Amino acid sequence: MTDTIFAPATAPGRAAVAVVRLSGPATGEALKSLSGKLPFPRRASVRRLKDAAGAVFDEALVLWMPGSANYTGEDSAELQLHGGPAVVEAAIEALAALGLRLAEPGEFTRRAFQNGRLDLAQAEAVADLVDAETASQARQALAQLEGGLSRRYDSWRDILVEALAVLEAAVDFPDEDLPEDVAARARPGLTKLLEDLDAALAGADRGRKVREGYRIALVGAPNAGKSSLLNALAARDAAIVTEIPGTTRDIIEVPLVLAGYKVLLADTAGVRATADPIEQEGVRRARAWAEAADLRLILVDGAGGGDWEDPAGLGRPGDLLVRTKADLGPSPLTGPLKNHARAGGLQQLAISVTDGQGLEALEKLIEQRVISALSGADLPAATRLRHAESLTTARLYLDRALAQTEVELAAEDVRLAARALGRVTGRVDVEDVLDRVFASFCIGK
Ligand SMILES: Nc1nc2c(c(=O)[nH]1)N(C=O)[C@@H](CNc1ccc(C(=O)N[C@@H](CCC(=O)O)C(=O)O)cc1)CN2
Ligand SMILES: Nc1nc2c(ncn2[C@@H]2O[C@H](COP(=O)(O)OP(=O)(O)OP(=O)(O)O)[C@@H](O)[C@H]2O)c(=O)[nH]1
Ligand SMILES: [Mg+2]
Image (cartoon, rainbow, N blue to C red; front, side, top):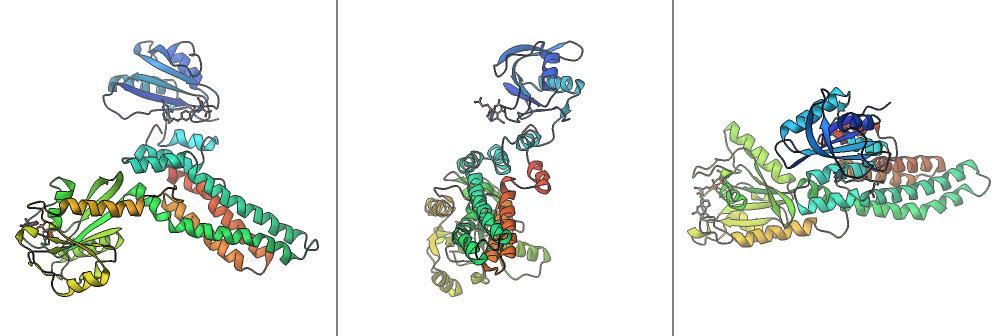
């Protein structure tokens, strides 16, 4: 016997309309108590809603969606209320008084999953679509919601299941054919699949970066002008700027939208050798963030001030070398940095936050990096770590299966690979990941 649940589906606060949704076997009874006779199914009907004491608390649109042809796959309904906090509160109290229970985060979608309306990857996409702040995040989530990711995993899994049938036949009926011959029939398909999984893994980062943001680190020596550039790019006063070297210690992350992609821009502590334990920790964090970033802007004080420690330890091929304070006059790059810039093939440009020169060019350059890293015609095969982990696991088992000399052992590895892929869509038992997946939803989804 399932509970009947309810929750506001719209954000709290004052709004034109607020939606409270209901789902579960007692939904019809609850609607009758609130609004008199049941409205015609799937048709918006205006009803006066009454609380437990019989007092009318709103004149609302009511949607009654019985059966399984709805979002959750069980009797459900919506109250589209006047969006005042007191009206919503009255609806919640009336529903609680009828014995209905407030839903947990993600519980409506969890029911949709359990009733086979969505698979697990699609359920994750619902959360991603609700969380989407940029066009690219929304596009990716919608493609996943429409089954783009699921179809790929299912088709890979089908190949494994077919191969498994061939291998099991070789085990079960060893005299029908030479087992090796039978097993050999499975090989070409599996070899091709291994290549497909490798290709998918190579592009797996892209999906996560679209979802979570492309990370750009501003790094360099103290006083290079990192915080000033952060403030200029963010168009707000996010970081403290002073003429004292070693001002910034904590990482200051600013989210930006560039070319429709989410970007996380981080200001970091100037890197230098220091005896100050606080600054040491700042430098450690700066290095760690820079290391994990997708792009580093290596800032060098173009006015020639400030020392520069270990530039080679921060920059990577493809990074940008930014000479700051260009308003103070051109100054040639000096010392090890010059060599580093040449060796690493870093693209260089000069900027000034004081007179604004070079800032537009820098923004363009950053945008190009983001676009070339994240754009692509197809939906990436992984948009979360969970997906990439399953891919990696499946790849390992498949690789091992192809190296097995015993048919039984090969079959077992193929089975394990299929299981790993099946966890992404929830085709196999995924009890252990459900709480983790649905906990990140908002209430009412
Ligand atoms: N008011 C409202 N808006 C909403 C939702 C909702 O539940 N309520 N959604 C959810 O959160 C999303 C839409 N998703 C939905 C997906 C399937 C069905 C549904 O009833 N499907 C049936 C009938 C299809 C039809 O009418 O043709 C089915 O597939 O059998 C409803 C909403 C976004 N907007
Ligand atoms: N003339 C001029 N001064 C600048 C420019 N950019 C930054 N400065 C100055 O350089 C000094 C250091 O700037 P910050 O942005 O705090 O440097 P930082 O790299 O964040 O320094 P730390 O946090 O100490 O590592 C400040 O006095 C800024 O006003 C510029 O483009 N032109
Ligand atoms: Mg700073």
